[in-house]
Every structure is written in structure tokens, then in C-alpha cells.
Image (cartoon, rainbow over the protein chains, first blue to last red):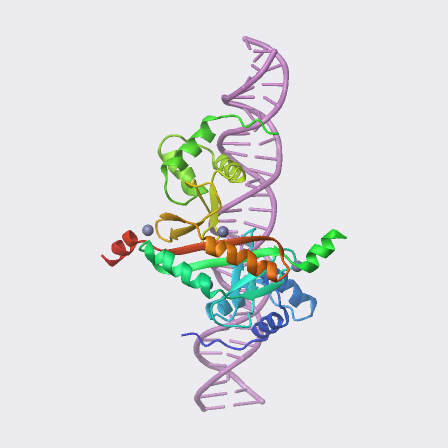
Length: 133
Length: 133
DNA sequence: ACGCTTGTTGAGAACCGATGTCAAAGATCT
DNA sequence: AGATCTTTGACATCGGTTCTCAACAAGCGT
Ligand SMILES: [Zn+2]
Ligand SMILES: [Zn+2]
Ligand SMILES: [Zn+2]
Ligand SMILES: [Zn+2]
């Protein structure tokens, strides 16, 4: 089993995620870190994010263009997101209704090891206002 | 507006999709066509699939590894899928409950242009049996 | 404090799905 | 058949992500 050493880089990534409320890509995060002086190699950012995701410390979702987006969510339990396509602003959602529906439907078809992907995308009020100007 | 000429290649892609009940990647489709002698260039397969997707003739979804998968579904109306991770076997799902839930939740947060991604993944009965052997 | 051991870093290469390039091929019309 | 103009396909290119491996540094025992 790994030792999981605490390094400057890993700390920097976690701290940056804690300060950001929105879903961000690995490259955006890399740029953010470079901008604030806490420079971290891109490969390291990817590795840190992957480790955090494996440990369920961050949530990962795929943007419509295929890029992976990361976020340190408030709740650790299973939940879903409503995300702004433009700015990444995120609202955490939980839908007991949907959870029940999903597992029932899948089981009825004889499927096992069921997982579900449920994400909502939209344009937030701020981005709509900015676009209208 | 485009002329949309009927070519051997385009026909071959559509026919292959009609015979396949499961979600397939562009590369898988390209290989399938080559194997049955109806060889079609990879770029052309991508273009045909994209055109079909734009015309809502095929559904597209992203596998967990990010690859795009295509399928010619029975119903044209909006719906979702329960897909086997192993073999791609697919069951079309529609959930009026979920549709209502999704739009209500997003609207309540002041988001516009709402879209949702809802896909169920599992292991089908056949693949489970095969794995247990 | 000081090495030693071993996990970690990072610049660049490699990878891979997807898209762009552009001359040759062929579908449609006259 | 001939003119027109979309489509094709081998190949180059792109962009996000992962791999490589020598240099580096955490943590530990002394
Ligand atoms: Zn859920
Ligand atoms: Zn926004
Ligand atoms: Zn299966
Ligand atoms: Zn729906």
C-alpha cells in the first residue's frame, strides 16, 4: 500500500480546490497554481487529481467536449450536479426520487453492478446577463 | 443547405448500424465494415456518424473512458439508456418522472438552456454468467 | 543533523480519439 | 459524355491525458 507523502505540490492542489467553488479542468488548475506562484508540473496536477478522485475526495465529471472537470464538493455522499456550461458554477443536487428510479429500472432488466450518470447542464443567471449585454 | 448525396460509404455505415443493436465506437464500426468487405475510410466513418447525430438519426453517448459510442435507436423521441459495460447491450429507457425532476430542479436554481445527461451502466445477465464461468 | 530508502516530481515523449487537409474520385444534372 | 461540386481517404495535426526516467525530497532510523 502507498505511503502518500505530503508534498508541497499535493498541498497546493488541495488548497486551490478548496478555494474554488466551481468545476475546473486539470489545465485550468495548473494555470491557476502557476499564476499564484505555487507552480506545479502539469503531470503532477493530473496525478494529484486522480489520487483525490480515487479517494473520493473530489468529484469528476466530463464536459461536453470530453474534458474532465474536478471539484471538491461539500458533501461526501453520493450526489449529482447542476453545472453552468460557461463558468463552471455548480449547485450540488441530490434526488432520492431519481436514485430509487435508477436502481429499480436497471434491476428490472436483469442488470448488475449498476451505476448511473446524472448531470444537469445549463447557463447560470450571471452568464445569461453577461451574454445579453 | 447541403445536398446530402447518397454514397456507398454512407449507405454502408447506416446499414451496419441498423444491424447492430449495441452501442459501438467509430473505430469498432470502421473495423466491422472493413471485415465485411465494405471498407470505408476512418475519417469518413466519423463524418457519417457526426452527420447522423446532427440529424438525430443516431444517439451518441460517452463511455467511461471518454470514447464516443453510437447507436441507431428505435425511438426518435428523447430517451435514455441502460448499457452493459462489457458488451454494449442496450435497453432504451424513458423516465417521465426524471424528466420532470430535472427541469424543475434546474429552473429552481435560476439556470437556463437546461440539458441533462442520464445514463445507466451495468453488467447484463449474459456477461455476468460468462464472467462466473 | 545526517545519510538512506523509497515515493514523488516534471520536462518532454508518447498515446489515442478525433478533426483538418487537399488532391483524386464519383454523384447528380444538363 | 461533360461540367459541376460534394465526398472520399491517406495522412498530418490537434488536444487532453498518460508514460518515462533521471533528479529530487519526505520520512525514518541512527
Ligand atoms: Zn445518484
Ligand atoms: Zn455561469
Ligand atoms: Zn453484456
Ligand atoms: Zn431525459
